Length: 100
Image (cartoon, rainbow, N blue to C red; front, side, top):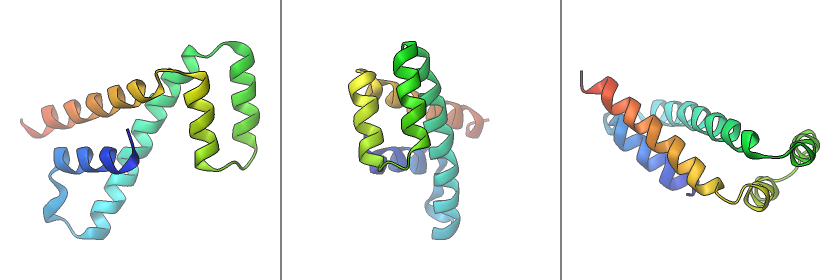
């Protein structure tokens, strides 16, 4: 799942269309960060110790987003599904909270 799809999914769930563009972007960045943290925790739980150590070393280096994604894709084969699950879970929580 790419960043555009994630942001569109969140924006639709939050019904952000009526807000100023700057406020939309701020909210989307915050929700994206929450989703990424949730997905990353799940991915780390699935890594073995040597992979976690390589991941920590990579995180300490200033690598590109593409290199970071490539590492996760290589070492966590279901990384996209994990991200999709985190997005779906967040959207579900948003919909429950806003439907009350």
